[in-house]
Length: 289
Length: 351
Image (cartoon, rainbow over all chains, first blue to last red; front, side, top):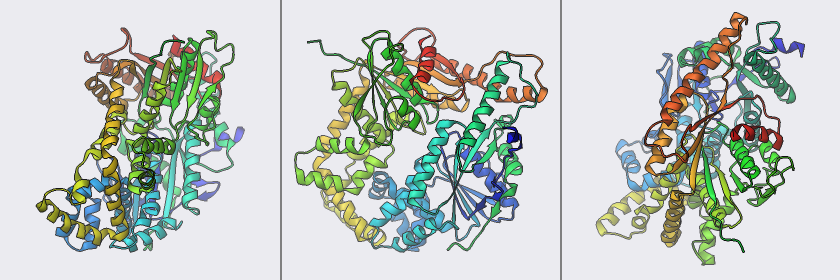
């Protein structure tokens, strides 16, 4: 266990840097740090020369922090914008989207909404260098991706048919999409994340997917821990269990540090995480469609 | 012949990732230890926990199994523990069967992709089907206490709001209009809209929508009646809620929203568990860097716990007992597996 002190956080998988495609999906349970990671990635990509980044968040975030990043939310307007593009008419798109039947359909079949949500981002790939998607919670991301394949099959004709076909190709192309699965250094969340990865690979066999373990505790500075110091002993046990867990899997993980000092300052947390860890990224841009 | 039991119902509510399932299992174990015949209904448990309860999570058979308690854990002799992982598709098919006797219609209902998406994709479907399973278990004369570990959700109050959104969709009259039932003027507008729909969405999806409207309208009435009855059963006096949360300030708004909801529905709160707290006694002589890290990691918890306590002391909240509603559960490190681990938590719960 002596080499454990040499574990460094960062985007380096057993000597191989993580490569990112233009469409980046971030999935994981609530509270594991998906939004922070999404913002940190946007920061890193901007520093690496990405000129236009679309960051798709699922709730109102704190203020935007880089001049290259545009932030949109789980878009109620996605369908209308997409329809305007396809129908080449704002009026027709408005008629199509603002009526009780369409509202009903989108609520009754959330898979169609999911597909349009992705369709909007897919379109954005042609005008942005990177699209980063912060999915709401575990399972949701996968079923959103799934919707293109299940609901897509029902679109046998009509305006959207060709786009759906191309979108499927993009989603199946490992060069275009990167899946970051965020977890914690705790047994249950990690197991769940690995299950999620298995399901993802079942749907998209060659998906470029990586498990990130967030909030890993720092090493203890002191040489010895007093046996009666409960807090320090808790910390020690925590590190031991993290190490044990990371050693138990043959699969390499990326680890990110627990930075509680930034708990109330999300912008600095993202920047700090970006400066600390994300500098080793290899970035691929453009040329998807 | 024993008299029919009216089981006590405990709903375990909280946002995803706070430890609902583990707590539900520990509460179940405690209840069985105290002599009650207890059923835990748990949705989507982790493999490890399922194994601890003697279940195979991958099978999701929807069958209730008996969890054998080691003798030293069951001192009462009358208590017993049962566990159930519902199978959503099975529950959904049972649900459809309860709506119609017509075999041909039933087959069409089962194949309908939009209707199926209600059962598999709609936020609220998981919650609703959990209630269906609970309703079935309540009518089984076998239990003194049923603990429902609610499905993972983004917000704690989704458990109530999800099914309500779902039922309002089912009550919507738009489908009747879609099939041309209604006034001529409406039908004219609808016709033009349908042409646009067909142009954009294509024939395949369009046919599916019409088929959905046609089959659904035939079961709309019994379906709504059934859902209304099931949702109303939550208002019974046997039902109470245990809330699980983490000691984070971000959870305060969640809990406040949930409490408002429970108050409006007159549902009682038994306990709020602040799960995985880290309140350690001070210790002198630590390395200054270590001390600073511990301070930043744990100090916000104390503040969050204080705020939670304050929130829970709101006068409008109906509690099942007087005294402290908030209970802190200390994080005692990583779980391995097995009933013995759960028994450790049960011990804390019993205090």
